[in-house]
Image (tube, rainbow, N blue to C red):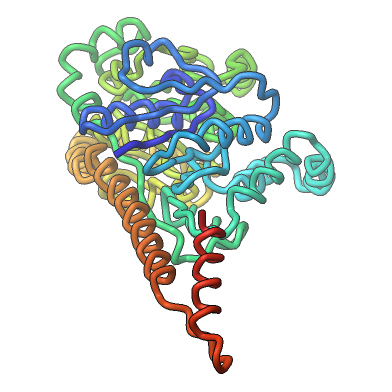
Length: 418
């Protein structure tokens, strides 16, 4: 199959959608598919990958990129075009960021109540928001394309906010590489990373991996650590992020600085999963968090919020705990304290690993390929119906003109299709 993937940046080091697309492209290549990637830029990991690159230049805005991607794709004659949420010319549209409207509303709720109406009015005027609105008008047009939602929550948002009919939606949750993210890495990394962090073997090490600290709930975690009163030691390590200094100052202001370490962006997160005892992700919005799946695959019990699509895969009290309100620091602290018990962590860690094995990346790829096959089958059916219609003799009910009219009409139909 000849497949086109559309993503703004084909660079696994940038974030979740980029990491997933890189991993997915490699899986397609291993299965023998011809893969074309349309992107603004390609990261260093793409070097040597046997894909056909189509670099989009001179596209200053998101709408410009989407239009340029459409022009690039038009002459290629691909079997399936799969867009990750940045263009509109596709057979399969998969908004990895979920619903922008739902995400914006969750972000808005982080502001004080009195400020929300002002922010909502101002946001509508921002060029960035106008770009998103212009994109959405083309991305969610009802032209028969299939729309892939990463969770039931995202599917509901796409129906409610964009009017996507349920018959066009397909639910495919993210999957995880269970070989790369595995408890087997603990022997290699656990002690070394803890020494680097200055964390003793007796200390319960909590982990979060994030870029957008505010949206992913880092302030909630800092407040929870500031409330710490349990005599049993615990330490939080925050991996990744932008504007780290701002949150370091917040930790100091709350009095939690001695119980929190910020690493900044790291090249490989695997050693940190291997060193941790539990993963905490009180996110305000996540379509289906890859980092939660990575933690589960690493046999870590997980605390996350019900605002995370990945929470739909978990069971309360089995693989971890689910927070009703991501901003509730007291509830978050309560769940963390329950995980100070080593036997509880081990029991939940085993369940976490079992859950991840049921949601492997191989399964994710197989489910996406099934969507591709549906696209191809639908196109063949449409072509067969059209050919059948063209082959039918035209019957003119006007007396005495059937043969002549029939020949003229058939010729006209053929010309229009051609």
